Length: 176
Image 1 (cartoon, rainbow, N blue to C red):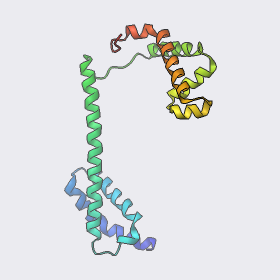
Image 2: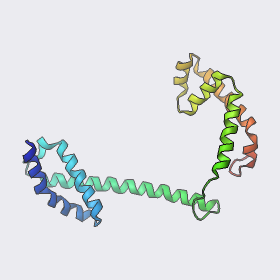
Image 3: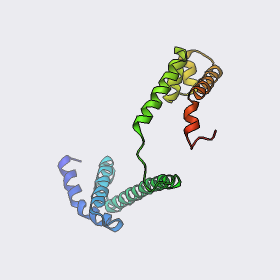
Image 4: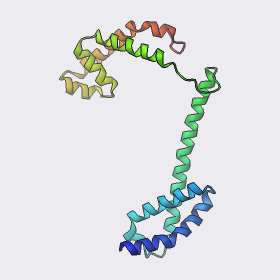
């Protein structure tokens, strides 16, 4: 299908798509978003469905599925936000509190100082671990058995816990 012919078909069906989207939502921005999603998805399969007698039914299904996906995405977002607000209220706050950045800078400097007391290879190992590398990946990178990697990380974590114990005592969220 040529570009001009495709454009003409899409423009012809755009008002139909708006009417279909209006059945799902009254928000003009969301209607426009649903129409755009349907048009983009229909372009991917242009050869299969244009000049097909059930084109509008196919576009209806695309809009319906896009609306359902958007609805589910927003529900998850609201649920997450509600859990956060509940956590704040559990801490006695009506709204999220702003953290003390100066205190966090002191904490980070203490963490860096504690890490610098470790041997260099332990520092690199622990930094890779905190970056999300798996034990297997670390084992291959450092040329050690996976069990050795696990033992060293455990040792590093315990060492850091001892060196940073003052923060654990002052944190009401940590069980001593």
